[in-house]
Image 1 (cartoon, rainbow, N blue to C red):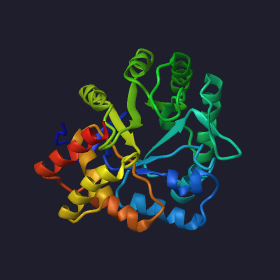
Image 2: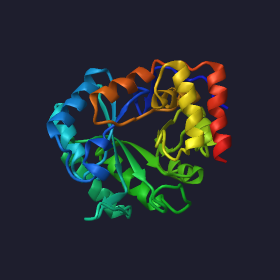
Image 3: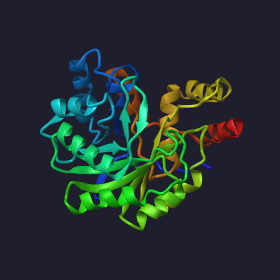
Image 4: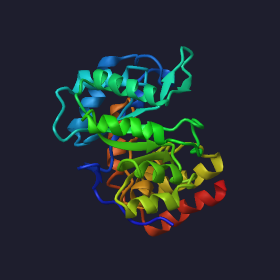
Length: 291
């Protein structure tokens, strides 16, 4: 059941950020591999992101690899004091653009230093550990050694806050016994709601939840409901999906990505879209269609 939670900001670590952020992944080349066709245009998008008031950017040195972080540094450094940059570790890229698990403790430490260097920072505000037991589905497995390695870097001042990505409730609990966890980044959208209970539990503890693939995995049947609601509201399906997530729970932070200035404006406009109760009821039914 959806709940109204469309407030403007939420706590991420020790900062208050706007709930609509920006994901930099799409600034890399096709397949998130290689450079963009027009690096200058990509930097223009990043500048427009900050100028619009967005203060939370999600990135990773594996995007490209070594592409989006460098674009962010080129476009936005020196960074505004209120800009929160969140990065991710736990994988590397093959020469064929494949995503390869790389989350042994020593690999994570090396990736932290890579992110510091490419972003031009002395400290990373938030680092998400991407758990790669299964690349796209939360899967149980031990994570204590990985979290302990990053906790040591936190003690050294290289990391301020730690989050988890692709994590189960048990792994989150295990990590929290070692170090505070400020955010969880998992697959969640209108049709894929396995994390409903987890979102509510995290909200009760003041922990942010960041869904990825906000439109991923939809079938044409499910999308027809979304398309119909969007048409009635004079919005795009993506805008409605964003608005539904923002109203689902106040601890949800969104990081829709785009390399288009026009699409960026559409995403920003979605944060002001209030869905009426009857629209939410119909949208909630999409999950039942997917079951």
